[in-house]
Amino acid sequence: MLLDVQNLKVSYGNIEALHGISFNVDRGEIVTLIGANGAGKTSTLLSLARLPRPEAPVVTGGDIRYEGASILKTEPHTLIQKKMMVLVPEGRHIFGNLTVQENLQIAAYAHHRDKNRAAVTGEILELVYGLFPRLHERRKQRGELLSGGEQQMLAVGRALMTGSDCIMLDEPSMGLAPKLMYEMFRALKRLNSVKHTTILVVEQNAKVALEFASRGYVLKTGEIIAGGASEDLTADPGVKKAYLGG
Image (cartoon, rainbow, N blue to C red; front, side, top):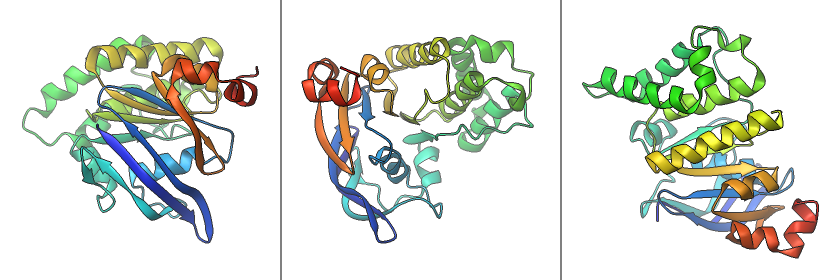
C-alpha cells in the first residue's frame, strides 16, 4: 500500500470539512474520488499535499501514511524533493510569462538535486512531450497564450517533471472541451501503464473519472459513502442516480 488515509478529519476554523474519512491507494494504481461540489474532495487533496496556505484545511484527527509512515509533520516541499507526492491544483497556476519548456524545466530544476540533473530533466521532458505532443509543438510559446486544455496539460506535465511516485489531480477536466479532456485522460492512462505512476484524481465528472480509474470512492458532505471497483460503482443504482445521470 502506497497511501493510507485513516479516519481523517480536517477543519476550516470551526467548520469541519471531513468527518473521519478512510481510504487507500496501492502503488501503481489509479483511484478517483468523486462527489458534488462541497463534498470535501479538494479538502482531501490539500490535506494530503500538506499545503501550508492560509486557506488550506487543518488536520484535526486521524492520520495520513505514506508507505507505512505518517506524513502529518512532513513539509510539502519534502514530499516533492523525496519524489513522493505532487499536487496538480485546480486552476492550473502555470507561469504565463514563461514558455512551455521553461515552465517544465523550472519544475525539474527545483526538485532534482542530484549530479545528473540535466540527464534526468531531459529524460522526463522527453516523456512529457511524448504524452502531450501539443506541448512539444508549442514549447516556445508563453504559457498565457495556450488554450485552457493546453494549460491543463502543461500543469500536469510540470508535475511529472518532479519525478514523483504519486500524482494527485484536482478537477483536471474542469473547463475542457470533451476532445481535450479525453486526450488528457488517455495520456495519464499511458503514463500509468508505462511508468506505473500512481494517480489519485478528484473529479466532479464521475462518468469520465470511473472510466479512467480502476477504483473509486464517493464523497458526500465530508464522508465516504461508497467505495469499490469502478465497474461496481458504475452499476450501483444510488451512484448512477446521484452522479451518473441514471
